[in-house]
Length: 115
Image (cartoon, rainbow, N blue to C red; front, top):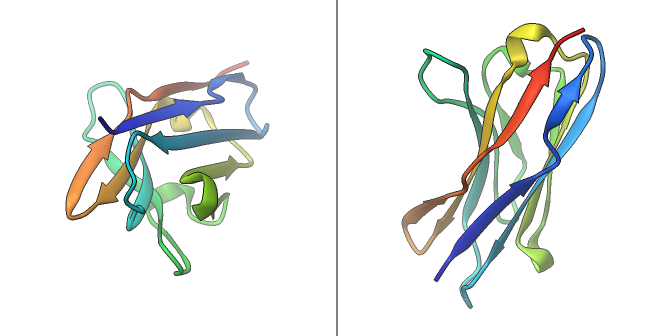
């Protein structure tokens, strides 16, 4: 059974930084694309950043320029460094891993930006 687990969310003040992590377990197959998505209350889930195995990062949306995504293929892990956080970045952040053509999602980690 594939498990996708996010960690590192929490409360941060506006202008602060936070690093969230994702690890995939339960499979012998390597992940293809891994990505970070977020969903704010009352809004649709949206892509923040993604990386293909052996490829470069791709960024989307309003966080572009303020985030850095990195990946450790040996650990099937994905990281998101978020800087200059704003209250509107408050959301549940989800990790997605594509393995053999199927998307697997974690339960999400809450990021709250507030003073």
